Image (tube, rainbow, N blue to C red):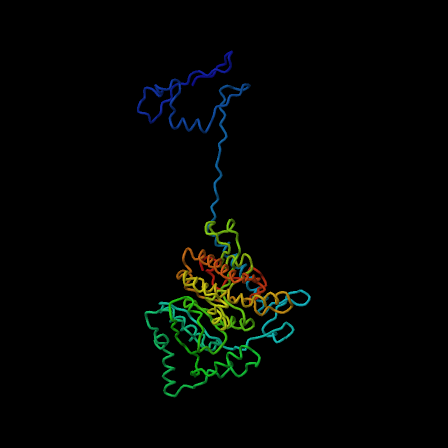
Length: 489
């Protein structure tokens, strides 16, 4: 290679000899005829020129070749599987410690505000005190009302669970199945529960120990001035049943296929306490008993396992599409937890008073336009019932929440263990389910406004109005784990 020479005009580089590429087939020339004086560099030489550069230092040797600084791209460190597993393990251990401590420090009972303004929690064992205006329902058993439509396997599992697994030991006295199918006859109970058939045969043979349904705790101990006593005393002449772990089971065929039919008044009802449940929901027996106990201290309200939240949003700033013009937005558990409040209890698994069955179909309490809306949308019957209960109790709730008494008519969330096989199927699994329910909220509110009725839903604090009061606020959770992730339940 030729040496660089200086000239009066500055630094002069002599022409560079043609560099032939070792892979080039044309050995005669490495220059392009179209580009004069620009050498075609071989790949190896080209890489050399990219990685190194000639530096000329005027005061040093002209032949000195300084190696350029090499730019290195930092390598991304990959998280090992062991690190991920270790993080999950630490997270589970930490959560387990907090859960254990929470179980030790959490309380079950009624929260109320004392005279000095401090919040107190009274356990069921100490609820005999009259200082807080305690009133407990005299109903000591409840009836399970199951709504079903062409799901025989679900119905069979539901009857086996509530009639056999829980039964009278969980204070269930009656089970009513709302058979909404207008084409097919309901099955025989003996076909669904074989053991029930065996008991019936014993009863017919005179081997069973018969007892009157009016005996026990539903009639004799009712107070004279209690409304519960009057209703239960009026039904004390119902048919007798056998003394076993099975409650009585009866199918009810409504006159038409309508979601409003699940709230039809029941003639043979022997208790004021109703547990309304869908055929795809299984509430374990301890949770069922705990929910019934919570309702007994709030008999005019609803106690249930599925709290929901309705937030009022403007049509331009709402989280729903602007063109839908929805002002009230229906939210499920994640928003209930995030806001730490709720204002509805879903009837898919809830306790309420039997008087609301009649009020639901009374035009003075629930406008017939609401029933028509339910038939039109084939949805929202539980929202309509929530409005009926809220409208009936709103005045007393507002008074109790401003006094030192406990709120007897406030909604109560009863957290429990639930197996819900309808999370991924049914009408609540559709993509437009939330929009439909939000639209129902607006339309029912408009119907109420035409009668000069105020919007009835009131917000309740999740911690104060839960039957189980956790020590750590983040320990409040849904009754079914998948409520965290399923959008449309």
